[in-house]
Structures are given as structure tokens and as C-alpha cells.
Image 1 (cartoon, rainbow, N blue to C red):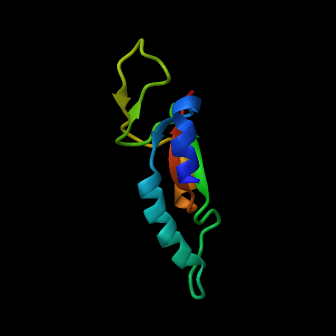
Image 2 (cartoon, helix red, strand yellow; image 1 turned 90 degrees about the vertical axis):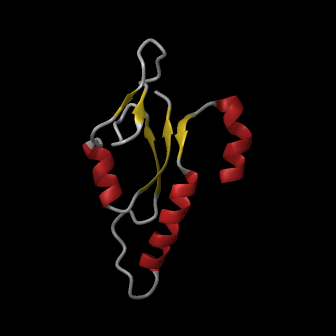
Length: 96
């Protein structure tokens, strides 16, 4: 999937931010939770793409405009926090 995205992304321009390397590391951890003796959470290992307008602590928010300078989010949106706590893996942020 990663190679497909790399080929198509310049034309499609769907992602504001790609977090594939971090997602792969988290997926390896999630895989262990699905092994015998593991305790997977409800969304363990599920890849998630979130809108860039949803704040993610420490990452920029542009809200899809060049009219305002980007700002760095101080906290993560509650929905994203819950998805991550349930084991979802944020692999990309999409444009608005």
C-alpha cells in the first residue's frame, strides 16, 4: 500500500501529512497483541487517516489554507485520542 500511495500522492494530493514509518512501528507492536497470549484492544492495528483539521498534539494545523500561518496543536482531539487509546494507528492526515 505504501508504494501505491507514494506513486499516486503527487497527483492526488490527498495527504497533508504522512506518518507511514511510525505506523509501521506501531503495527509491529499491534501484531504482537494479536498473537497467543496478547490482549488486543478493540481497534488494535487498524490503520486510520484523520482530517488535518483535527488537532494532534505537537503537529501543525493548517486547516487547508495559506491565509493563516500554521499553528502547532497543544492537545489531541478527543476523537483521535480515543481511537489511539483503542489501538488505532494514525498513518496519515488528510487535507480538509
